[in-house]
Image 1 (tube, rainbow, N blue to C red):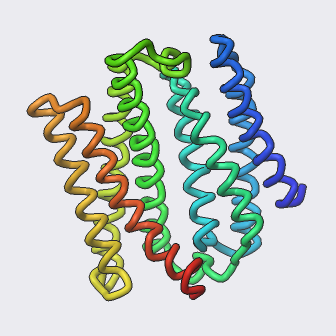
Image 2: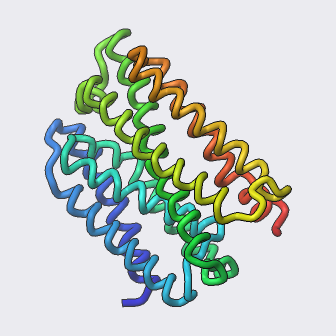
Amino acid sequence: MTSVVLAILSIGMYLASALLIIRHISQNNLQRTPIYLAWAAVCAHTLYTAQAFLHNNGFNFSFFSTASFVAMIVALLLLMAALRKPVEKLGVAVFPIAAVMLGLELGFDDKSQALSTHGWAMSSHILTSIIAFSLLNIAALQAALLAIQDQQLKSHPPRRFIQSLPSLQAMESLLFQMLAAGLFFLTLSLVSGFVFIDDLFAQHLVHKTVLSILAWIIFSGLLIGRSRYGWRGKTAIQWTVCGFILLLLAYFGSKLVLKLILHR
């Protein structure tokens, strides 16, 4: 099966899964079919990425390829979390984004930035960075839903989608689990960067390094505050979103400017 066919199948199944979730939520009857479709979409997405890896003799980390890979990891992590907690409704946001990112990768294919020129050390650094970003991406989405859920429960009868979500306590528990896992991989990413990269504060890396360290401080502070002072609610939401924005700027900000605006 060609890579283009795999990508198209994956995009279609991502979108079908999201539409079925929306339909089942409106009927207050969530079934397993959307989850099966999402698993099939992630598998097809993974096969497409594997074929691209073999074709390029390494991972391709151009802007859209990286965004697509991150979206695939986010979708996979969400499906794994859904095995233990009823969080599959987050697929309403995650699966369409994965479909769009894969479509953009397919439409703007740039094989000029494969990872084959780097050794295992740099590969480890980049991959741990991507896993960290993916986990903290889910945490940021979780925080946004928590804010909406909390606001609607306090102000007026919540909409059906909010009613279909797990309880605030379950959502908050998953948020801190994702934060802890994301912080672990972010720590590995920073440590591997300091060990394996000659000058992590070089001109082309300094903003990424500083923003990533600031995000690490925010997430670490939040987890310590949760453990020692019981921080939760708005404090957890605000800190999570701030830390994620810093990571978003660190990982994609400069690449977006250079590739899409300056065409470098």
